[in-house]
Image (cartoon, rainbow, N blue to C red):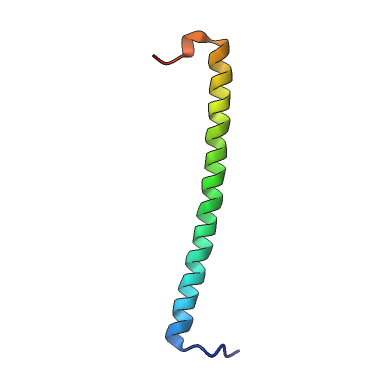
Length: 57
């Protein structure tokens, strides 16, 4: 299949496509970690409201 691009352009396009895929993977990981942090903060707030000695001063 000839896309009409030179070898250099094909190589560059392949690198761009790979970087785009890596960016999407990092976005997904970031969202997962953000949700874990939100869940941990929610847990901490609930636990600390039941255990006042846990509050940070």
